Image 1 (cartoon, rainbow, N blue to C red):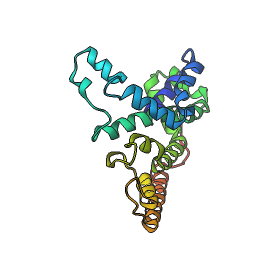
Image 2 (image 1 turned 30 degrees about the horizontal axis):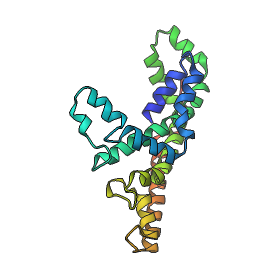
Image 3 (image 1 turned 90 degrees about the vertical axis):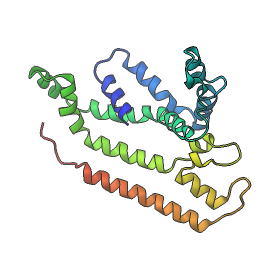
Image 4 (image 1 turned 90 degrees about the horizontal axis):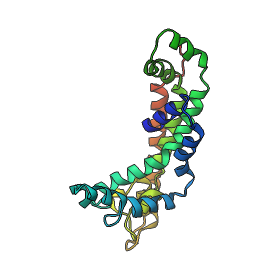
Amino acid sequence: MLVSLLFAAILTNGLAGKTFYKTVIYIPNIINAVAMSTMWITAIFNKRFGFLHNFFALFNSDLAKTDYMSGSIKFWSLLVAFCFGSVGYYMLIFMGGIERLSPDMYEAATIDGASKVKQFTRITLPLLRGVFKTCLTFWSIGVVGFFVWSQMWSAPLASELSTTTPFVYMYNITFGTQGNTFRNAAMGAAVGVLMAVTVLIVFFLINFLIKDDDVEV
């Protein structure tokens, strides 16, 4: 979310080639999740010929020996890849919110001697509260429904504990997994209800912490 906001702030600040950069950053969002996952697994994180392995090997670094697809590191590599594919979507939402703000406010702030940083923290951020609420709500729903990426990062035949999210657990407990025919639809339904309640709690917290009161500029 912070990276998306940073890109949005840069691209709405009169950067040359704005349309080109916006398109490049958003492209991962239109690529199928399965294809994107396969690219990261085979081309980036592969311990034999992946980009990271070859990059660190150039410097004879011990990081070249790191297996990004095993153990606890596997979950973090999954998060990096997933966030890479999500940045562009939230960047467009932030850009839409920033571009709606009146340029007169920034012109007045510039005349008063406010730097770009102060303009961003004192004008832009307070006026984007509604946009923040929207993004955080969408993000919460997307994280709770996290399934395809987790399955792609798991072993070919069954989900691994390091990449098992609540949604994957609900699916496995309801329909069973490879080599495990145990099924419990009631428990799966209970997990689904807890996930829904989690989203509602996050939604109410967001509305409680981020007020829609008018901001005095």
